[in-house]
Length: 75
Image 1 (cartoon, rainbow, N blue to C red):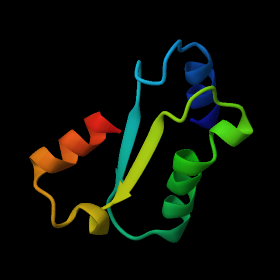
Image 2: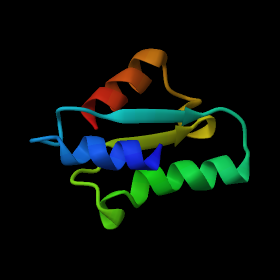
Image 3: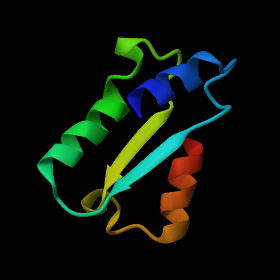
Image 4: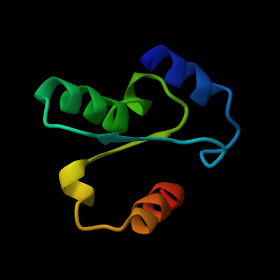
C-alpha cells in the first residue's frame, strides 16, 4: 500500500487532487503505528505530497458524521 501511495502522489500536480483518509476502528497498536506512519512520514520517504490523513474513533467520537466528512474534505 505504501508504494501505491508514493507512486500516486508522484503523478499528482497539486496536493488537492487526491486524498486518502483512514479511520481506525479498534485499538490495535500495530495498526495505529502503521496508520500514523502513513499520515506523518510519507513525504520523508519520497511522496510528492502528504495525501494521507488518519483518525481514531476516539478522535472523532464527539463529532457528527457531517463534521467528520467536512474535516476529511478540508484537510
